[in-house]
Image 1: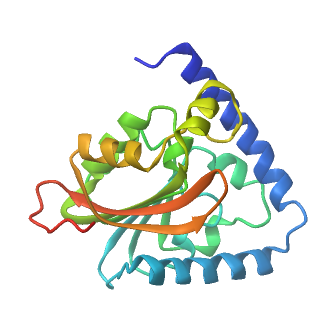
Image 2: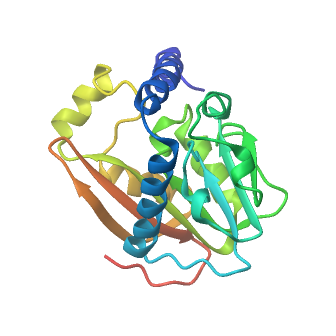
Length: 224
C-alpha cells in the first residue's frame, strides 16, 4: 500500500503538471509546435532503432498532447493519459487530427487492453505515475510475448542528489526519483529484460535515458 506521503506527492505533481502544460503551450503556434514534435519523434525512432511495421499494434502510455502517436499511421494505436481533459483544452491538441488513434483517459496503472501490443512507448511518463510498481506490472501485461517496450525517463547521476530529491520536492513534476541502477532493478523485478540502454541527453543532475526492453520469457541476448 502506498504511503500518504507518496500519494500526496503524486497529487501535487498532477496539479503542477496541469498548470505547467497550460503555461508551456500558451504562446506556442499549434502548427510550429506539432511540426517540431513530429520531427522529434522521427529522430527518436532513429536513435532508439525502433521499427514499426504496417501491422504493428502500438500503445502510447502517458501520451501527452503530442506523443509518438502523432507520427504513427498504423491501424491500431491506443494513447492513454490521465490528463487528457487538460490537453483537450489546448489549441495544440485535437483528437480529430488523429483518426487512427483511440484516446483513453486513464492512469497507466489502471489500463489493461483486451489484446496485448507489439510495441509500447512509455516516454517520460513512468516517473509521473502514482504507483510505479503497479504501472510496470500493467505495462508487462499489455506487452505481447515478442513485443518491445520503449521506456524513457530522467535518471539521477548521483546518489546524494537522488536521496535529497526523494526527501524534498526539488522536482515537483516527478514524484519518483531514481538512478539508472534503480530502474534496471525495477524492470528486472517486473519480468523485463533490458536489451539496450541509450543516454539520450546528459545533464548536471539527471541523464535522460531510454531502456529498450522485452519480456523475460523471450529468449534474447542481453546487451551491456
